[in-house]
Length: 328
Image 1 (tube, one colour):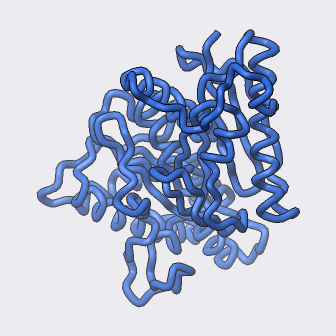
Image 2: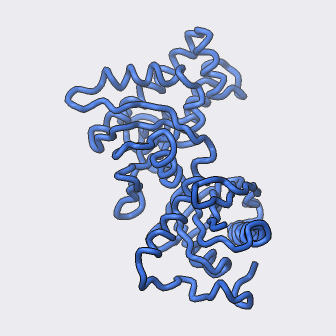
Image 3: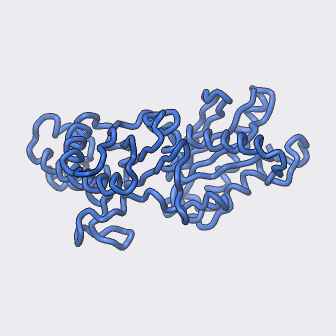
């Protein structure tokens, strides 16, 4: 059975799958990144994990994976296949695509984690069928993925979609990026957690607790939540003014609050638009599997593009049919 390897690398853990031609998840696995052992150890863990997945495919499906896709955090040069920088993993300028290709003996696609998750949401998730979408996960920070006709735009330098660093409160809270008043300092899950912990006096309280308190009518929680929603709406209206998406997909931890978030958010965005067309605002559908599914799509796209190009050359320089050249 033809299949591909899909890897989604996070700050502390990795999710992986073998994905069939029909998009079915044939096998799933998880592994800690081991970042406490340093960036070189993280890269080694990724390579070993991928090799184990290749071996599983040989054992259970009679052949190794035909390609692999990997999604990583931080700054990613997708064209060159380089993981340029990731603060939470400690690496710089890692030629991850080439390292994996040589280890596996197959073509490899490298993608940014949020853009890769957005690719999956756009094609097979909440944005399926939309020609233009914007995917915005609200987690520790806020990023975005700009979807255009089935692909995700990375920008000239790999920074497209960084909506979390749109300034929504000039001269506001300092951001680690060097600006003040960035959206993610007000509307990320971590920002809401911080604001609610201060408001309720419980240092252990988080955004999920705030959402529960909002649902129960706590006025302090409603105030904290509305401030976050207003900031988020300001940032989203800036984005939709520039991008004119047909569908706006909201994911991440904060979106788990459901209509506690979406009802006031839809109202706030509607109140702010003037000439702009209001997009459909929907919750993400794929949860924490989006990155892994997106990595599988990257790998399958790679196979499709190779099949269309009869002159394509294997970038690994290896013969995957020769066991002496491939480390399993």
